Image 1 (cartoon, chains in turn green, purple):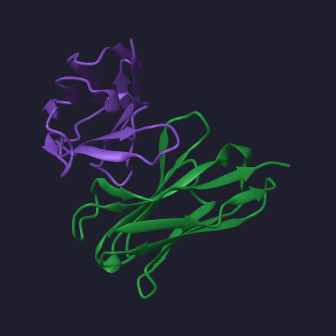
Image 2 (cartoon, rainbow over the protein chains, first blue to last red):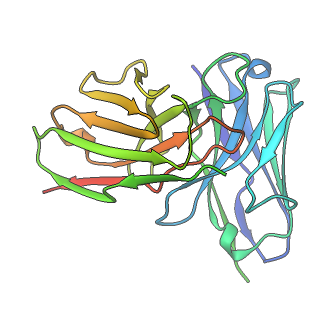
Length: 122
Length: 107
């Protein structure tokens, strides 16, 4: 069974850092692109970051560019989001998501994790 | 960046109604558009991809269509389980933009 489990969320002060993790299982992790998506309380979905199946291509939303970094460890079936210089507006549920098709880069998000809450507050 | 808009923002309907909602892209995305359903407190669920392909396990009452930069999600006969928020998303570029959503609530 395909499963994504996020962890690492919590309460953090503005300006501090946090690292989110996403543990993947039930599929060949190294052959699928992955994403982070967030949802602020009561708001819509916002794509945050993308990484290709082999990690050679990444992209980040303008709202987090220069502060957040997506990465992956295919040997451990893990996806990460390093979040630096956090702002109050980064408060959201953060989801990891798996692309649908093998080795496709620009693809739909087939499977989502349950999300991890990040609260940025002083 | 490509901008996505959705209309209406809220749609009130009854069980059994045929429901249609629209998503527009600010420029051509060919057919690289998906529809997701999200219920409160839950992760989103993929319904439609490539504008009109039904995701495995999704009921056939859901369908998608495309005309230029305008995309439509139709629910042929609304069921109690369908009251939710629906998001479109483009994946034509490496910036995977979501629309603001259409909330379907009970009339």
